[in-house]
Amino acid sequence: MKKMIVVVLLLCLQVFPCFAESIESLPEDWYFVGYTYGGITFPVPDDVEFFELSEQDKANGIILVCFNQDFTLQLRQFAPSDITWDEFTEIMAGESSADVSYLDEAKSILHVKNTSPTANSELVSISMNGLDGNMYKISIFTGMDEDCSAGARVWECAQTVSAYTRYMDFSDWPLQENATSEAD
Image (cartoon, rainbow, N blue to C red; front, side, top):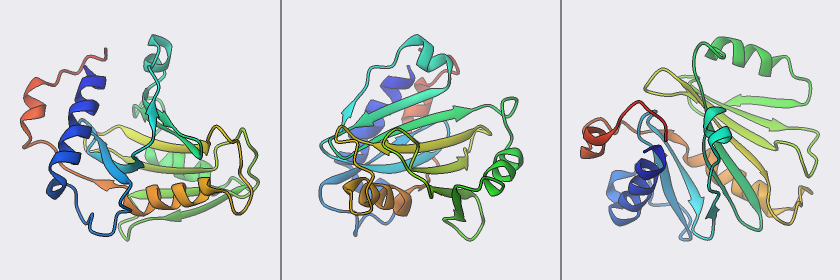
């Protein structure tokens, strides 16, 4: 069911861009995706492919994984019983290889850049509490090229995702009428 909601939302945001906030400067070859339960919305390039998630992935809270030549993106959900927002921000603040900042004045969207990147490490993460009370983390890794050098396109992709990640309340959308709390 979660996969279907994400796919329907992808289509709606492409067909009805007026639903996405402030998209006038979104690069032409990008579009918004979102997760209705958490109210999480962010852009991806139009050439990404989506992984089919295994039952183990879903059990581990992974909601979406997409990739292209330049970057890989993972959206993951954490229940408050797994980790709280305060615990997570405290851990990130103490991480010596993390450049930590907030993407909004309310300090509700945390941006972390890895200052010691490798081809197989998380390069950037964007974390936020969802409108449903769970914490969500968007993780950005290298793409198929595994390039994380200073001029690699993965950094441009991460910057675009970071610049446009936001909350969007989907509760008035008819999509919620079909939603269940059970994961597929």
